[in-house]
Image (cartoon, rainbow, N blue to C red; front, side, top):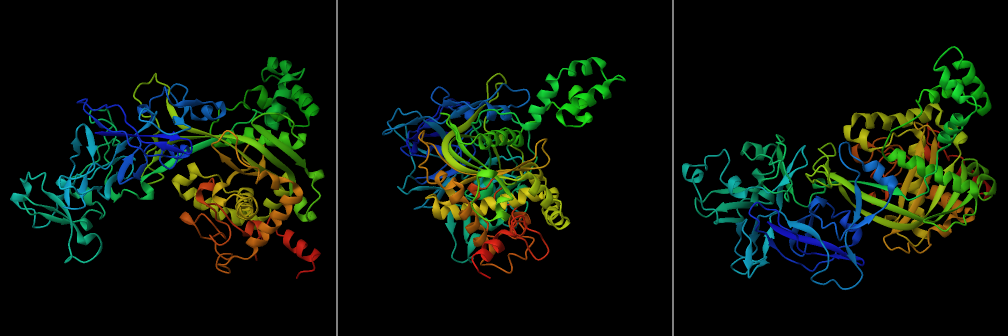
Length: 638
């Protein structure tokens, strides 16, 4: 077993050594000088990821292998609350160790393991699992002097998210053809495998063969990748990750293995969660609950305990606050208390904080959350059709975001989730790789009355139900994607259109911009807003190119320009008339020519988008359908 590591150095990181946990206690380790960006230790080179570096193929072990003394703790109680697991202590967020100058041999680092272990020599084509040790140091070269190249294929568990080496010697001597003779079955020529290319077997995988020099058995890679190929050869899942010791306690895994290329996208599906570091403001519904509990008659309601006077007392309290008596009775019975967790809970607090900032106007606080607010009455730019839908704008001068890698899956979004910390000690606080970023942004709040009137239209509901039905049919989508109700689809699409336009004016590429969608009617408080922001790992944050565009006089023209860009797509009329585009057909009228952005910028991976619900269509009423006709009419343009 060979330990490798990576550590942050300014904008990059360093490879180094790790401690051995093998049963024998022998572990070949090496410090390797290679840098990674700090953000890459969370994604894309976080726990469980396979990465090619300087001719080596490496995999990052879970955080139980980290030296926690050099990994800085990051504080964000809002995010930690959402990561608490039943039966485990409260988790810790830690950032990879970093340094500002030139990395030295003793620089703190993170471990990475060599994977896959099987390699072939680019010169003599010898295939082996052995490593070359010279004076205590690993040499990635064969005895003939040729460079050792990691094998292209690995074995991934279909449902258990496990990954392992393909046992090439075992595989080469298996099969169901006539070539499996008794000589092949008893062959023990472990050091005589070769990985060759045959000029007589056509192209593709059929021309790549593993040949045994002992029994002369030869098998093409085309027999490796077929449906159930590894299962037929008797190769089973080991039920563990490559860095877990052979004697570690694991649950048996009966899932089939599938051979895939080690760099395939599906080998690693990271699950990340992020939160904005904001003052923990109460939502409007929670403030109302607090007022009800503080009412002079509330104790009398509690004392009556559902008796004959309860409805009368509840009516008195409800009359004072303009709410229904049912709501007051629910509060008295404790029904309004919620133990809910998840992304929606994080967004509820953020939404409440943004709303308060917009109402407050100019922000003069010195903190990590500074927002200048513009309410509807102070927005005078743009046509009335647009101002009637937007009820507030926020210039986010500074915001702190904390991102954490919760874990990952392999092969399929429905596969078993693997935590970023696989430590066996139940008393040990789990650690999640994290990153803190500082940035700027623009917040748009939409008018609730205008949205409610629009989304109640039958044609709008019918259009949104297309995506709702498809989401319900996909198990992974139900748990990972927001409910595509009309307001979510429309606001999500507007965010994408605005990101594409801001890339021309802000000085940031579209991939550097992030979205955060607040759009739900299923919450106690309806939300309707979008945040577009950019963030960097440096404590000073970003350069102000985005937030300066948040003034209404500049943002409204940009939004109109974004709508104009999307009015005609280069793929029209195919795009605008489509209702089944994108991954799993979870987009309607949206493609790369009009609405899609970098997947790293989108919360849903470029899904749940539709231009028609924004700009309208032949049979659909768009939320902002009247904006462009009004602007063009004022300019005298047909």
